[in-house]
Length: 251
Image 1: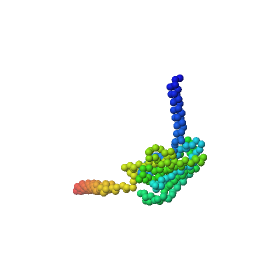
Image 2 (image 1 turned 135 degrees about the vertical axis):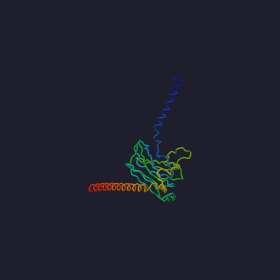
Image 3 (image 1 turned 90 degrees about the vertical axis):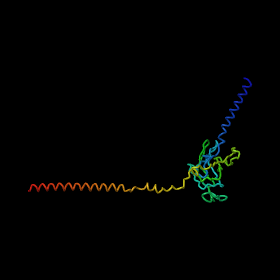
């Protein structure tokens, strides 16, 4: 076997081992995310915090998600998850925030799910409905804390990097896009009442009471009376003829 062949085989084996090592390490790169990853500004949106278990020897039994206080959300509700207890924490904001719904001094600052299990090789989604999403920022950050049954605590709280690269422990980030032209955002209902119908339309829509029906009725009555009069006249003529014949016979 030539030296070049040996070198090629060595390179191939090294590449294979490297690929296998990276493949086995991929699950460790998974992290807590928010899905979908974007929503419209000013909208009410339902999202799911997706939590994978990164350990082979422990299960995840507690998940905490912190909510922003610089852009508080006026309305937050959670969907029950079988087997998990949920606690929604409301706190006084560091400073009041003015929104289209008025001044907010308290808001949801944390949601905690506990008591359940995310086994190795599994993930769980925790759904939250929230809004109205702010219009003066292009993203919201939701730092998360993942606790394992062995006592290990992993914080996913690194802010997005300005250069676009992913930090070591990225926090779930919801990107906010400008509202579409059709409305202020998904899930919002129009508060504009329907336009009142015009007078002409109202007239057309109203039940018809035109004199056509009355004319038809009077014509029918006249025809009926005329027929009765004709019959009475014929009867009178018959009576007169019979009387004339009787008179001629008597004479």
